[in-house]
Length: 90
Image (cartoon, rainbow, N blue to C red; front, side, top):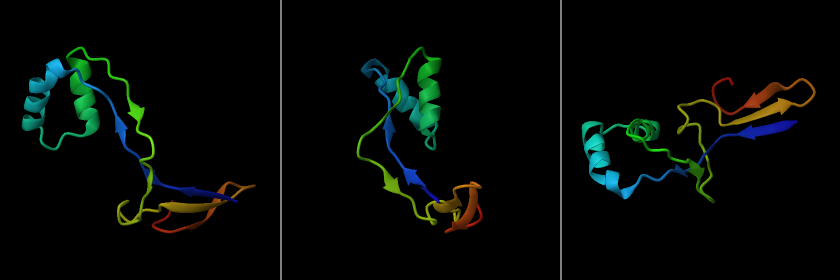
């Protein structure tokens, strides 16, 4: 059997300090910006950011954090069929 589980992880990318004011203005205009919105903004102004996963930041998710959807699923190995899950169907 296979046990799959969902985690959250922090990732990061750098923006050059010379873009500080532009970034703050972008965030002021887009207070609900997602990380990829910031990434795309930076690319649009000529940045070439490298995304890296920060170490030791994995944290197992709960079903509440995942909108009631499963965060643990058990699969029957030969058939790769889900046989148990802890939230709504996978």
